[in-house]
Length: 194
Image 1 (cartoon, rainbow, N blue to C red):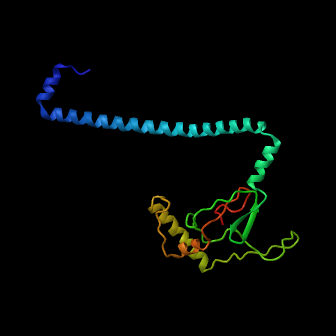
Image 2: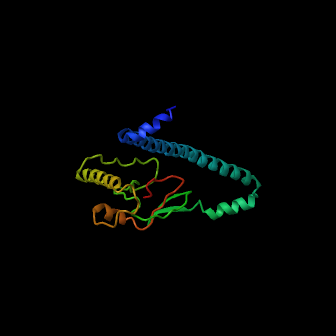
């Protein structure tokens, strides 16, 4: 588009040549960044579809394989899963049946409040459950403050797991009391593993 005769004139004036060179460099950098951003967006969309298609394919393989398995082999495999055994939440704290126990470090998901409410007495449905105390005492305020501090440290640490070393705060002490392992059940129970 630009006449070639004017290139010589542009090279003779250094200010015009510097402006054109700077504009060309900035345009190339901008277009390369735009290309990288488009490729990144396209890859994220393709990756989400790829994971979905992989799960659908795996489900299709399972649905095709299950009818071929004999009833004896299926029952023996179900027996090896031991789904009728109750899962142990903590030591001596037997929970629900129908799940798999997964052990994790006690400091992986620190919790200060036990999400499982325990009440003494009979388990008869006819007996009334005791009412919970809904008071706002100092320990409740302290618990909220600990949650805020924990959230802030996670944000500052960039969400890295294992970046927090030991520590001597009350959060570290209360989470280490739950022992080395906790369990999660697929049949119900709490989400935080307590």
